[in-house]
Amino acid sequence: MLKRFLSNEFNILTARVFLGSMLLVASIDKIADPAAFAKSIGDYRLFSEPIVTVVATMIPWAELLCGMAMMFGLLIPGAALLAGSMLLVFTLALLSALLRGLDITCGCFSQDPAAARIGWMKIGENVILTAISAYLYFSASIRFSLEHYLSNREENS
Amino acid sequence: MTRFDKAWREGLAIAICSVVFGFSYTFVQEKGLFAKPASRRATLGTVSAAPSVIEIQEALSLFQSGEAVFVDSRHGFDYKLGHIRGALNLPLEEFDTKADVIASLPRNKILITYCDGADCNSSIELATKLMESGFTSVKVFFAGWNEWQGQRLPMAVTQ
Image 1 (tube, each protein chain N blue to C red):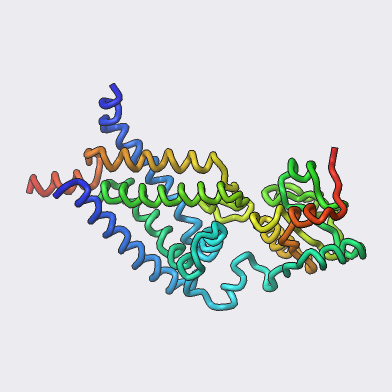
Image 2 (image 1 turned 90 degrees about the horizontal axis):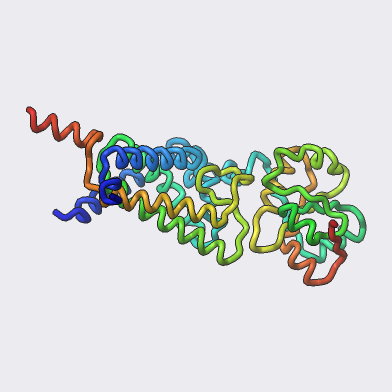
């Protein structure tokens, strides 16, 4: 029953669109203001400033590209693996900040200092998104994807 | 090629593209890593001067002289449990909805923001927002409530 649910093509498509759109939305504010995102990462007090600046330059674009790859259906396993790895690291960073008692903003979606602060709810959200990434990584289906369309075209020609 | 091999290669390709796009975009737009020093300094907002951070001795001295008003950036729940005597509560996340509290803040006195202490940053963020709102004399008592309480300085509890 569960196996059938998980291998359903429409469920895979829904998961792809959901995770893809979440990643796209998450990337917008960060791309627009990398300095504010760097400050959000710095608040976690895990890395030195040069590392934080480089990470803040790359991560938003990785989110954007993974999001687009999932939405359009290109390089899905790679996008799922990369997005899942990033989400896992975010979850561990959140957990570490919570355990250290830091009262900081998440920096997950909005870079507004008054945005939602870290908490168990944020960890829950990240765990769900990580699980969806894992689901997409293990589901081999590429139906309703650009990759499927391109391979069909290649076969027909 | 196994599923992991394929995914690993694809993931690496996306990661490399992210580096290329990220660095190119920030370079062209002069943002983040490639921001000019002036705009880098103003990353907390549009104010040109950052709020100064003060130690407990200065905070106490300003408290005793009555030259300053303390602004507690913590949640209302924490404020009610205990705060610096005379402090007003302006939780950072309620900044946009607490126009009445902001309007009641004196402009002829020094505003000192604080939160729990070194484990929070809302005092700095609140100070920045206050400066963006036109308050010119804002300081951050970064050691905050933990230090004040630890030294048993004047406190108040809201019933």
